[in-house]
Image (cartoon, rainbow over the protein chains, first blue to last red):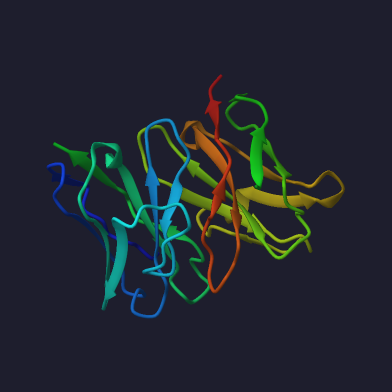
Length: 109
Length: 120
C-alpha cells in the first residue's frame, strides 16, 4: 500500500507560523493537495497542485514541496484556523489513485 | 455554484448493502468532472472509496474494490454508491465530491456528508 505520513498534532500561538508536513515516496513526482476540516463540516480544499491557492482561501495559507515532503504553512495563525488538516495525493502507478494522510490536528493555543 | 447533496438510509444492518445517492445541482454530471465518494469513520481520517465518470467508467480503492459499485444516472444528474457485506467498520460519514481532474485527482467541492451507522 501507499502511505502519506503527517504529524498527529501541531500547536501554535495566535500570530505565529504553523507548518504541517506530509511525507510520501511519490511526492517528488505527484502533486499534493491540502484540505482543512472543522468539526461537523466537510473538508475544504485550501491548497492544490502543491502550491496553488483556490479563490477565497486567505493568503496566509501556502504550500511548498521539497523531495518526498510537502508542507502546508499558515502564517499569522488565527483562532479560526484551528482544525484538522489532511494531505492527499496518489502513488502515480494507478494502484492507489487517491490516498489521504492520517490528518494533523492544528491547535491554536 | 455547484452543490452536492447525499441521501440514503442512516441505518444499515450488518451483512446488508449500503446505498447512497448524491444529487448534483449547478453543474452537469455529463461534463468533464469525475465524481467521488469519500468516507470518514467517527473520530478518524478520510478514506477515498471510488469515483465515476459520466461514461460509466469507475475506479475504486483497492481495499474496498470487491464490495463497491459507483454508478452514474445522467437522466437524474446524480451518482450513487453501493457497498455490500457491511460491518460495523463501515460506520462513517459518507461524502460525495467533485473532482475537476486537472492533472490529477482532487476534490474542489464536497457535499455536507451523511452519517451511516451499521448496526442490528
